[in-house]
Every structure is written in C-alpha cells, then in structure tokens.
Length: 361
View 1 (cartoon, helix red, strand yellow):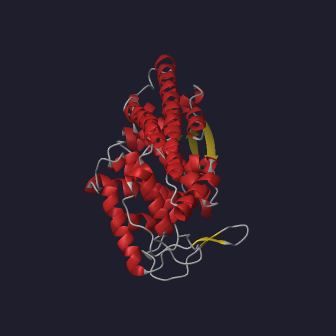
View 2 (cartoon, one colour; view 1 turned 30 degrees about the vertical axis):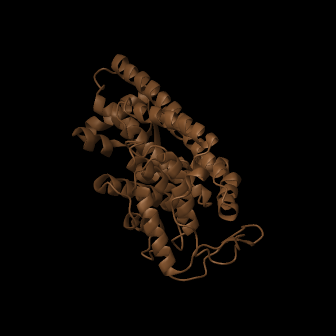
View 3 (cartoon, helix red, strand yellow; view 1 turned 30 degrees about the horizontal axis):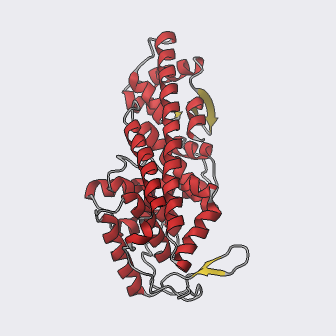
C-alpha cells in the first residue's frame, strides 16, 4: 500500500524488521568493514595521552555540524571563545550549538550511569536542546515539507497513544541485545526515531545524538567520539532520499548501507585525526622539554591540548599555581611558538593553533 504523505503515519510499523530485509549480502559485507574501522577507532582512543583531548573537541565539532544541518551556523572560533572567555556577547547560533554540546554530555552521563537509553533520557536531551519541557507531541499538525516547494513530504504519527506505543517499542529495541549486528540496528533505530518524529522541535539533532549514545550503550565505543553529522551534511540529499524510500517503498538495504558507510568513513577520519593529535602532542612535548625544561610539565601540556583556547585561570585551577606563575608558563609557550595570544574583551586567550587547525578539519 502506497504511503499517503499528507496523512499522519499512525500505523508506522513497529520494530523489529524482517531479517530478510536487513541481512542481505551487501549489508553483511559492509557491516564487517564498518565494524573493523570502529574497533580500530575504539582502541586508538586509548593511545592518546589523555582521551578527553579528543572527546572535548569531537563533541564540539559534532555540535556545530549537527546544528549546521538545521541551518544554525557558527564557527569553531566563536565556540571556543564562548567556552573560554568571560564577558563577551554570545550570538544566538553559538548559544544554540553550545546547548547541543550540553545535551550530548547529559545523554552520555545518563547512559553511563544507568546502562540503558530510555525515553526519559531522550526527552531530557531534547529538553536541553530546545530549552523547553514540551515533551512528546500531543497535538496534531506536524508535517515535514520541502523547503523549496512547500510540498508535504511526510506526516509523522499524530495520535498521542500511537506515539507513546512507538516510543516504548523503540526503547525496547534500542536496549535489546540479540543476534542482529548492532551496526545494522543503529541504522534501523535512527530511521524509526526520525519517522516517529516525537517532538515538536529538535528531532533531527536529538536523533543524531542518539546514534553515538547507541554505539556507547552497546560497547562499540567507550566514549562518544564518533559523530555522523559531517557525513550527513556531505551526503544530505541521499540521507533524506533514502529515509523517505524506506517509508514509501520499504526498501531497507540502501538506507542501512548508507549508515554503515557513514560509520566506516567517519571512523577512518577520526583515526586520522587521532594520529595527527598524537604526532603534534609528541612534537610539542619534545619542544617544551628541550627548549623550556623549567616550564615543562605533563599537566600543562595536557591542559593546552584539552583546552585549545587556554587562559591564566585554567592553568591556576589545573596546576594549583599562582596567577604570576601561570602567566609565565603561558608566555613561555607563546615565545616557543606553541601558543598564540588573542585578546578577547578584557582578557587574553592563548590558542594552540596547530591543534585547533587539526580539530576543525
């Protein structure tokens, strides 16, 4: 039966999906490639001097990319300034991206603590994103439209009980461990969430946060360092076309392959980023040891990698030294060419420019 895009899809099929549709030969071959890349990434994260160096940067990069899909545009520079400098005026787009970062961290800590990813956590994530407590949709009238033509592309379920039932089914599916590859199920749960479209606003960004939390929940990552938003931006038309293709013709293979390839390619890119960070860290360490041995300290070195935009207060707090000593440390690293000063409002930030260039790629 052909889907009528202008009628609420209250009979959206619940999960699971028939194995014959999701375990085709091309899918299983791609699962192997994606799983190998993801496992390599998982292992390499632990070879970093401090894994939080990557975690902090990747979360901020994902927040920016995912928000860009929703046409919320800011820059890495503005984001790091907003996190580091006091007294500056933060524009609306930057604030919105920083809320995305906050939502990721909230979801990660929740799954870490509870060991499950439930509807309440999903609602909490969306609440942070949108700064409201509207919760799941209770009223009709939501429809997805073509931004250019205004044509209705898809009308998600609008019956309150149907939405509740679908979310409970999705919650069970997300947390269940069975014989199906969790990478295949990653693609399926993402499709299902986007098709339920359970909130008035913030569905796209919430759904993209769920992807990495799902990988963490099932042990495919030890921390949320893989995000697919940049890949989705690169292939945005395919992303929406394949989502719609599942709804209209029940064609799962191309959609699942798209998501599996996103995992593989993004894993490979993040692996390259880790290698670049490790190389830069070792070079910076050697420069500090040989050219400024009195200043060299592992805590200081890790700080300027965890905080690409550093300042005196960060050093004081981290190392327990005086402001005079902290200032001396940062100025010495400036003289070495490790950090570059930038005056923001009434304070000076010290930028690890080489690291910043790696992180924003």
